[in-house]
Length: 519
Image (tube, rainbow, N blue to C red; front, top):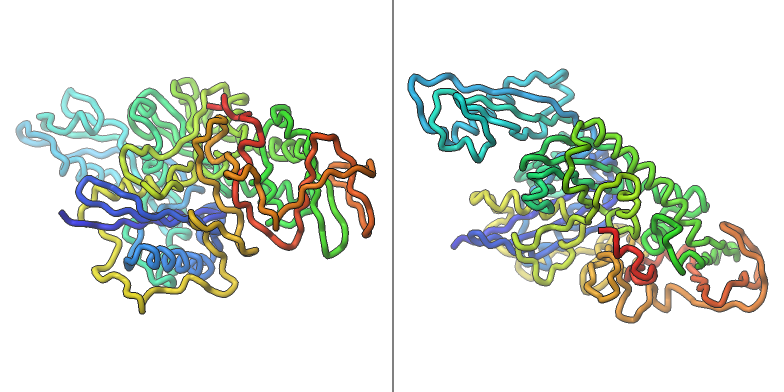
């Protein structure tokens, strides 16, 4: 049986994810999944092809080196923002006598509907995708699955058409060409991601797929087994990081690391973590700053609530707000933030669960990263392309030892691997892997086996006995100044500014299972 490889690239505002799967017949085995900081991308659109290509080339080199294959082409997705939706109709010429409707008729009527759809500005816009809504054959109405095999003299179809800007898509060509990689296919990600994380019953009875990424948050509504609505807003996790940066006068990397390490929504549900105070030392100036974990949560909650309410407005505008019987499914990088799902439930009243790729459709043994919500888009592209028996993203020859590419480039961000967490100052924190500990904490929220969030070289834990001056963002200068006084249960984490150490583990268990009831 022929063995093929499929490689996908998810272009995000803050991360670029490369996923590689081996397909043998109906068997899909995901071999590789890595995320690394992206460059030259905003709102999921490539604006600087050269910068984006450098990150992509490094990611491909690392995958080729580990898997000993040569990746010649990849599958990627259209931008998630600035997408408009319209309706289009198609009709096949009437036949002289009834005939059985086949798949070739479905493809033909779709081409007719798309070819005849008038774009307002064809030079500026292009079609990203089309989703069939209903079919009609003589006196029979149904979906695509029902209509195939029906005897009829006529066939009509109704489509939901999604269009976006042409410029961001045209920037993909110079980016991938500069990286020496071809584009095998470009997919409309709301459809493929939904197929990867949603259950058939959810798609049939009504569900909203909420993806909160770094630069874009989107809502996809499914009903009757098909995508009915899609919309997005240009806000996400990067806006939360920016709020922390501006409010606390931190640099962006430190703000991002603090968000990932100690960030949570709903400060009233922090339990004992609400009493903790972070002390951030600046060795250059000999000063330190105090940041209450509860105040950090207040900053995060304010922006998160704004994002959630904007999404709920889009759901109301869709006309399907009262038909989401299965509630909302949450994916994207922000899905792992403690209490974020609880905030959505409190604001909307919908049941909320985290969306992770459905494992029964593929095998990912030894590649646990694919079971995180942030990997949903990558896995969705793999599953969508596995059915194409002609698609193979690798060349015939494998890499020899002499041809093995180097994955170390000067001033380039380093990727994290499952067995060796990143320790360079050029990277952002590694995404925590999901845990199955008995504490009941959120996925991706468990601490390491040593029970600590940071290594000895990253954090010092002190229990000061003198002084009594604290504040949300108070700054104290000079050497010989005592740290602020804390309660016996408080921990002061001294984070050394300028070192840029990344987080090796995740915060989950420190929140005492506060996310147990989010689902």
